[in-house]
Length: 156
Image 1 (cartoon, rainbow, N blue to C red):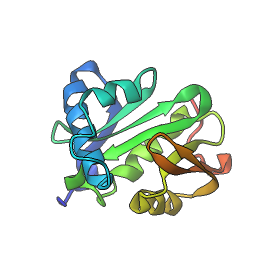
Image 2 (cartoon, rainbow, N blue to C red):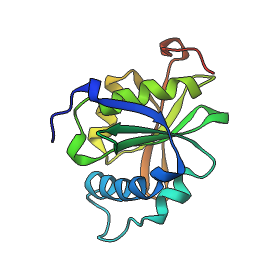
Image 3 (cartoon, rainbow, N blue to C red):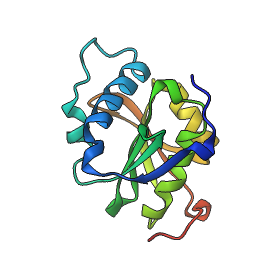
Image 4 (cartoon, rainbow, N blue to C red):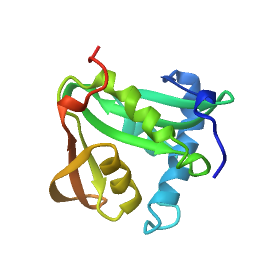
């Protein structure tokens, strides 16, 4: 883990020039978080498929993308939130979540794999609650929601 001063991190809209760095970050983050997945299970092109049609925010430190979040805006659904393993537990995830608030027009939801305990704890610490459980293609997951009352900014 690297020390990062939050003032040195900016959260901004995705631009096409970010794609290659975010593809690599996506694979590195998934490899670290989903330790149960087979070696080589995560591919660079997975980023493109996973974020197609979504609003993407990028967390950047020293002109380098260190995290991203993607939202399916029509459903106020947080689809992806990944922070490079070297920058986790530095407040970057919280900054990305706060940035996503502008895209939520209703109480936001997300899915989190049940096996990903650190992510579940993170979301719960940010006011998200488990609503239901189900099975998906990557394994059992929980559906989580956050009260619309906890939105920090007006949707725009």
